[in-house]
Image (cartoon, rainbow, N blue to C red):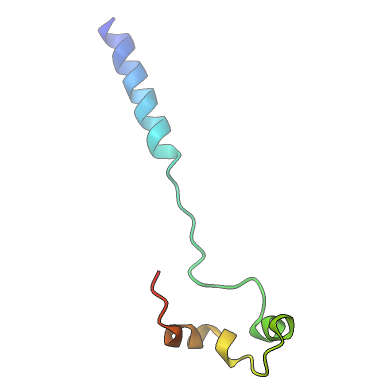
Length: 60
């Protein structure tokens, strides 16, 4: 009886920890800054460039 509860506990712990995976995409966009500019209708693509994202003040 003790071995069954240990096995169930281990399986439960494995399931709990394996389901908590987080995948983040480090701020990279799937589209180029120029393409985002076209979509939004902005006059400049500078605001959408990866190096300009720090200037927005967004903290993740």
